[in-house]
Structure formats: structure tokens, C-alpha cells
Figure 1 (cartoon, rainbow over the protein chains, first blue to last red):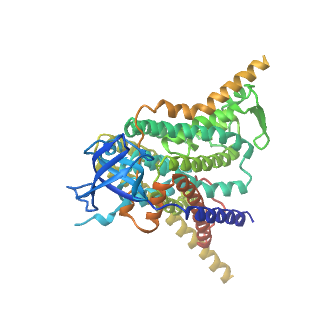
Figure 2 (spheres, helix red, strand yellow; figure 1 turned 180 degrees about the horizontal axis):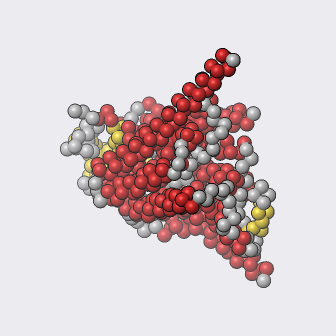
Figure 3 (cartoon, rainbow over the protein chains, first blue to last red; figure 1 turned 120 degrees about the horizontal axis):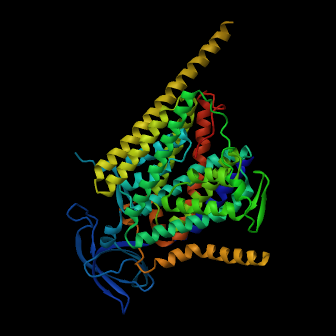
Length: 113
Length: 347
Length: 98
């Protein structure tokens, strides 16, 4: 009896979680070199990198395209400076790319292990 | 030769992990934990770290896999009525606060960039302590055997510290009926707090410390201490998993891989205890702890590959040894059973 | 005397409850570390969870706890079932797993 109770309880919780989680927003991820971090207007400009990783390009290769993000509502890790490799999770809000989180990939690497 | 298929990308930690190593660690922790009856989580955090996980991720992942593993043992024990729930619930307060403190310390160390070295050195000390305990236990058993002393039921008679501690009467005073003790609620809360900090900091279940504390400091009977400790491990694991996930330091994929390995391994380990004889295996265990410690030191001094090879081969060898005991014993038992059946058929 | 003990245990309890936040506050001088899961490199279920990690960490934490607990239980019962089929006498063994 106990087993079935526990199982059904877990199932109900699982399904409830599924339903709520279904509403989660899908965020995009971009990675690239920080070109500018304008703290007055809360904007970060990066040069986007692609997904071709290699030992020579551990963060991907520069695609030559610049992307601008609004970081006013974002959680920002180690302070981004021009030249740092950043990874951003962002969502489209109208025409603005609104960042949720900003990770300083290159500086964080040093602290990792 | 292209070995990239041996590496799996962990999206959150952002590292490529040698996945056979992950499977081996999960499986071994099950086998070794099941066999020796003590967590085995002490090798997961260093193991994951050596495989390439950042330290905070290693701790979070370890603590989550403990939660999954202890679920089933707790259910089993509560069936026998070995859990003092009242004591367990009082201890939850201390355990959760302790884990949170431990986890916050880890996060703080991460922010100042010292998490790796600090945790590694704490682990070295911790493993040295375990190794000393194991070897001392072995030496005691050997000398007793020489003197011809038969080891009786392990009792708490030798140490009655808890009698003194029960005299502390800071309110609220609580009566724990199942354990048959009356003491200040602060006593179990303090004990659970300290083990909680250790669990949150090192990513272990904390049973290694909580069990003796329950028996010697609180005065719980041994079988209830085992059950209540398991209940506490489950709670600390679940809470630890939650808080470490909330802090973003967990790798779900690794948790599942290890949990699966551990579930299979634990069965082999526990069955093997039935067939194991003598104290020799404890020496092997002590040496495994020492090897694990050495590999952490190697990792600290940036010898990544030797560290990984040492820790994986050590747990691999112990694992094979225990599996050999299990399969030999099981085959023997099945053969005897078959013979018996044939004999009865003939009669 | 009793009042003093009560008072002190009250103060002690408050300090204790605030300990985790005190530990946290003491470390705020250094920068926070933010991690973004790279969802570009994974697909399927892993993509879903990595995305959840980026967008809604609380939901991700709930998922982790529920899934870990459910998986632990499932595997445990499954293993018990399989081991009972092997024909070994498992009744006499000690329960020492955790």
C-alpha cells in the first residue's frame, strides 16, 4: 500500500511540475567577444562566435557579426570588459534582445577548478 | 585515433567529461558503499573534480546522487520501524541550516576563487582521518584475535558521554520515545548542524559523523541510529540537491548516470557482504582511501592525468575484487541449492 | 534564573537561524559567479533542461529534486525485483546500504 501511495504521490507531483514547466520561455544563447559594455544605457555589444570549436579556437570562431543586448534586467557575473568572452542567455522582447544572464566565460575559467 | 566519442559535453558545467569514468565512479560508489556500509560519497566529489568538473559542481552533483540513493534505503528501514521520526524531525532543522551554511561557504569560496584548493585540502585531511580510523580498527581486530577475545555485540557501554550531555537542561526539553531518551532539543540540533555543515561543504551524506554522534552523544540505540541516520541522509541529500540547484551548481545528466550505476553496484556490494570473510578487505578499503587522497594531492599540483588514472584504477580494482567475492559466493550458493534440490528429488 | 535561560536560548536561536545569511553576506565583497548553460550544443531533453536552467532556476531545482527522488525509488524497487529473481537467499544479509 505504501509503495503505491508513494508512487502515485510522486506521479502527481511530476505531472504538476510538467504542466507548470511547460510554460517556460525558450531562451537563446549567444557567445562572443565583448566589444563594449555601456553601463549608462545598460547595453552590451559582442562579436558573435560560431560553434566551430577547436584547440585553436576554444570558444568558437568569430563570425564577424555584432550583436547588441539590453542587460538592464540581467544577472551579470564577473564584470565584462572589452576583450572578454561572454555567454548570454536572452529572449526577444519586441525588437530588443533582452539578456537574462551574462556569464564571463574567459575570466571564470581561471576560477573553475 | 579520434577519442572524442569517449567524451560527453555537460551543458551546464560547460566541460567535456570522460563518460566511462563517470559510469565507473557511479558503479564503484555503489559497490564499495554497499559492501562497507558507509556512504562511499567521499570518493565522488574528488572523483568528479578530477574528471574535470569544477569543484562546486562536483559537490552539488554528489549531494544530489546521495539523495536518490538514500530514498530506497530509508523506505526499507522505516518498514522495520527503525526510524525515530521525532528525533529525525528535530534534527532536520539543524541539518538544513548546516547544509545551507556549508553551501554558502562553498559559494563564497567560489567567488573569491579559492574553492578548488580549499575543498581539496579539507578532503585530504578528511580522508586521512578515515584511513587512520580504518587501520586502527583493523589493528584492534587483529590484536583481539591474537588474544582470543570474541567480539561481542557492539554496544554503547564503553562510552557514556551522553549521560553527561543529557544533564544539559536548556529548554525545550524533549522526550524521544522510540529512542528512549530525554534531553534538550538543542543537543540533537547541534549534532545535526555540525554534520550538516560538513555535508554541505564536502557533498557527503554525513553518516560517518552523524552515526557515532547519535550513539555516543545522544544515546540512541544502534539500530535506531542507523535508521534515523538514513532518514537524515535522505533529507540532507534532498535539501542539498535543491539548494545547490538553486545556486546553479549541479549537472543533472551526471546525477542520473551515477545514480543508475550506484543502484546496480549497491546490490552487488550488499550481496557480497554475505560471502566476505575476515578483516583483510578492510586493509584494501583503507588503501583505497589513501590512494584517493594521493590522487587529490596530485590533482592539486596539476598532475591531471596521473590523478585520474590513480583514482579510477584504485576504485576499479576494489570493485573487481568485491564483484569476484560476490559472483564466487553466489555461484557456490546456487550450486549448493541445486545439489540439495537434486538430493531431495532422488529421495 | 529560568527567565535568563529562556532569553538566552531565544537570542541563540535567532543568531542560529540567521547564520546562513550571515555567511552569505560576509562574502559579498567579491563578484557573483553566473553560469549560462550553452544550449546551442545540446538537443532534445538535455536542451530542455539546459534551457530551463537558464530561464527558470527555481523550476529547474524542483525538477531536479523530484526526478532524483523518483529515479532513486524506481531503481531501488527495480533492483529489488531483479535480485529476488536470482534465487539467492537475501533475507540473511545485513542492511548496510547508504
